[in-house]
Image 1: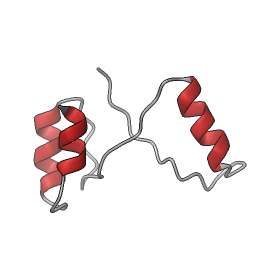
Image 2: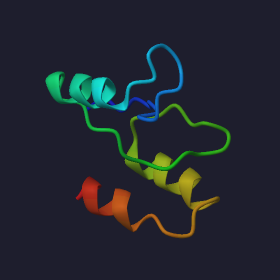
Image 3: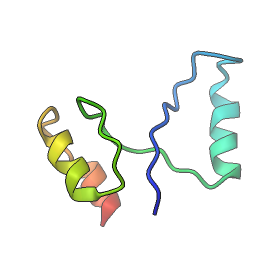
Length: 67
């Protein structure tokens, strides 16, 4: 599994939320998660969770999706 970070709130280009959503559907992409500081580039769940836990109180949604 590869994990990439992308904001699904476009503000550049056409800034078209529908076009962004359609692109993600077409390419079978799912964007979910909470940022980390500093932004951790990892595909390891435990590393992500440890870093995200430092700044977010509730990570129940990404934990559920990870399951």
